[in-house]
Length: 306
Image (cartoon, rainbow, N blue to C red; front, side, top):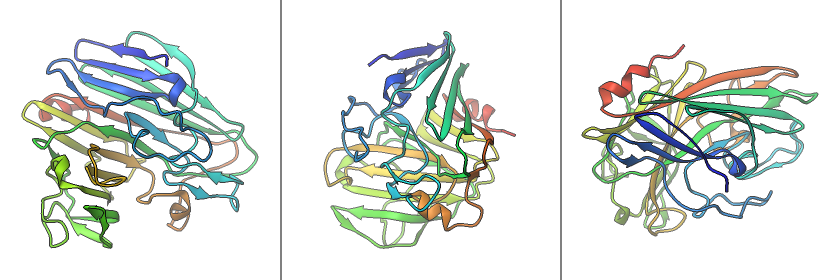
């Protein structure tokens, strides 16, 4: 692959344009902490690709769905691939400098562009989406960054007392629940959800927090924190916890804290909600998110977005 690095005194970010603009490394240089889950490049990127163990690396963009869904009856006119169209495929380098990288994915129906820029302890991601086709395009987007964590870390999510549940499993056995108290514990989840568990827990969950007033979430401990923040156009956060529990009991250990346009797993479910994200013919839409490293007080400096 062809990694490109952008960096300053505090951050080093490595991106692979030819593999879905994947952020393969986000290094906090002050403490030497790597925040992206590490791994190789899976060749499994075709239309029938499954985004499972070997694919679970780094930060990908999910668009226009997360889970696969047959969108033949919509303006997409086809089945949407697992985790969407843009991961694992070649993007075009638009601009590149020591501290900034803009990449673009072109499709006959849409253009998806992301600019990354490092500024002190902050990595800012600016997005632009354009509808190039002749029909409105409904979509679901999620910032899908798989984070390398340890059982010393905890998740800080302010003003949330309940999360919805779309997946919950322990030791390979699924548990059907519509919601859980945050952070718990509860009868269905004996450990607090805000405490990262060891891989031996054999636990996995996909959760959603909605209507987040603060528009940020943090994970870490001591002086080693990562804070993810987003602007007011994004109202929901996906929370993926995998402590050796998915795709089957094993040794995969990571989490993802995913700003998203809807608190669901695929576009079909998003279309069942009021006001699904839809791009009109010829319309462009922009939004932004940040990842900030260091002590929580320092990281929170960038958490106010328009």
